[in-house]
Length: 283
Image 1 (cartoon, one colour):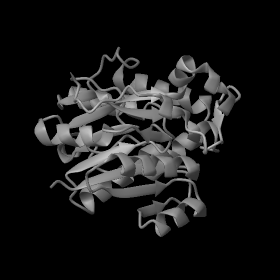
Image 2 (spheres, rainbow, N blue to C red; image 1 turned 90 degrees about the horizontal axis):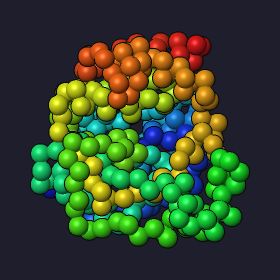
Image 3 (tube, rainbow, N blue to C red; image 1 turned 30 degrees about the vertical axis):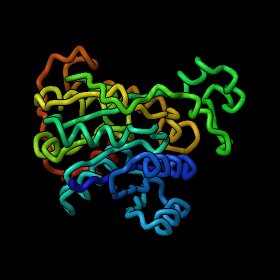
Image 4 (cartoon, one colour; image 1 turned 135 degrees about the vertical axis):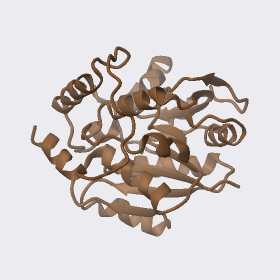
């Protein structure tokens, strides 16, 4: 039996985090450990929840951004412990039946090193079920009625494994990594503070390193879409998005899908991370 860790980075929004964890527990038949990085300083509500539910967690005393939180998860999984599989999920997702088990089954039976699920998001839900718009407020689609579960209207998941080879649909909201990925390309690049383009960069490094990857079309999850930005003070805004896009273009010689450079793929040290983060905060 493989050791499996679910790693989640949070920034407030405990109700969404609870739904994420509850849905994963309810839909998986495998024994799972959880590790939560509490990215919002003084978020005692999430800390209390983790303590009461025996969930291992750490708390950041300043906003260090999502890439730093992912690197903390990597360290816990593969520096402090010896987990075989790491599943990284967003803290504003709901796992549908068979999704987690499908990721693990494919990891067990195939030589894929990165296995991602397939997203069904809030915008797709409202296109298909416009009557549900009454539960979401404003352009940001704020959601507060947790007694209502509109995502349960979706039934496009399946027990039958459906693999898209050498495809990555989502590498940080619902994705399984084998330790070999970390051995080959290492940490995320914290220059993508606080979040934007970190997934593009890591995906590019995965592809350039010829790591075998796939997307499971049957392994579906619902994504609320950027609740940290829209329902929390996540320390982000369009300025950071543009900064990170420019950094990506400079690093790779083009935007995602149009890269010209072969930038180094391996980041094997966390030295100087906080200094890099502070530079981007001040930019």
